[in-house]
View 1: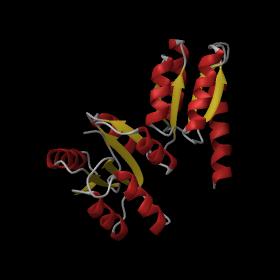
View 2: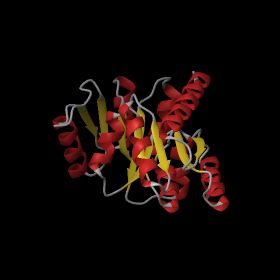
View 3: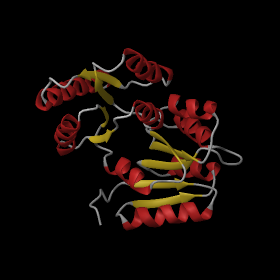
View 4: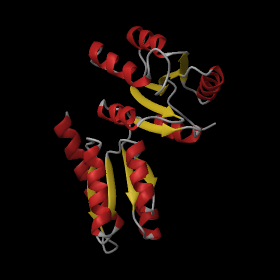
Length: 228
């Protein structure tokens, strides 16, 4: 079993019994404290009376959907859990609302359990998307960042980078300054459309991984100081 933070408390919310029971069983086996709610109303009640670090919630449910739960909770509590939304299908409006309210991640069903576990395990880390073409550069910078506790996702394809940006609110994306200008513009416009604070850091194959790591750490540290 992969080591995890046993004090992490997670609420699973889905109107399908099999999904919530499977997820809570897996989370418990991984060493987390897990609880569940069958709908948005019960989820809101639990979040108002108990402390959770994460809420894994289906965005589309009857009576009260996942976005409404997050909105209500933000109105009634100062400190709220990190919301990870998942759905088999959703309207662009709901996705945009979830992201604008500060959702931690937006994932599509079928649920990839390992991806959720990685998101939860790295709750004290920062999420970084590495979008480069050079295999050696990707490997080196990923190792440097991972060794320091950052959650790193890699992608070489431009379309995959845009999908990742829409699914997860990354703290930073690193991309090649020599890539086509239209690709760089679409990355920045996607971040802007999501109203995200994702930092854009450009590099090229001439920069050493050590220097790139230093720049990433510096910019993230500075951004966190501004937010705090």
